[in-house]
Image 1: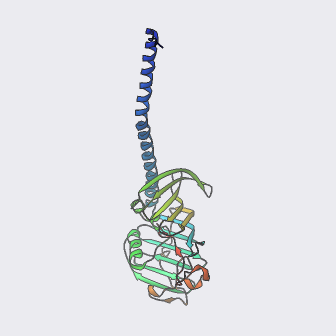
Image 2: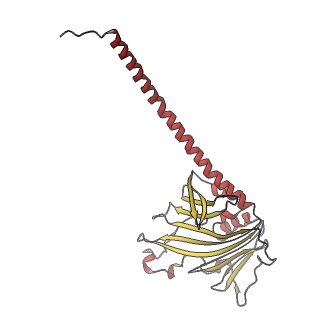
Image 3: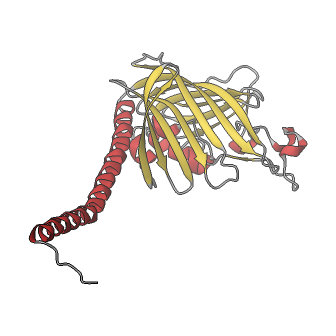
Length: 295
């Protein structure tokens, strides 16, 4: 059967169709990289937004000379049977920059107080009526480092309270996200999330002219079951005038001075002997708490 040649008008129509197909293919070829670039730019802007929220919080908190606050904390442990348990404490903190603070923490297994008056650090175990003191000087930031390094002690969420909190929080961060808005205790907050190699952590920062931290959650990625440490802040006030003896330790009647190594177990979780049998491993070790619980 003879094939009929296309008429001039038909050939022109096919040419126009061919141009349209080429145009669509070209748009698709160049549209994908453009969309990828837009998504990458949006992700980078989101990352910068998260960092700026933390930077603003750190600048505001670090600029306050006198702070009082209350807090509630929740520390999770995971048993060898992969049962997750939670231990709760409450406390108060008073901070006078650059070199004084007083923090108390009361839970089901410990009732302790940590004081620094610019000259010495004291830990008082109210349950055992024992205390330990050691000469120490310097800014709050340097003392927190010494407590962690020399005495294996920490104050709750210390990295949120020190003057250089931004650099402390951002150390080793590999991912940052601004999740959006949330409400903590009726307060509108910016919700941000960060990832380190060993931990993930989230922070809720009050919206407005006083960007104070309202809540923090730290998740351990090195412990099975991913236990978390959560702390919520309430009754936050700045500019409080503290009496002169606020940060000086005065041993209560009957209190006994001991070495730091002789202090009873003052952790937020009970000693192994106080735990139920199935909370211990076969070797008798206690369940493992979330690491980095003070970020």
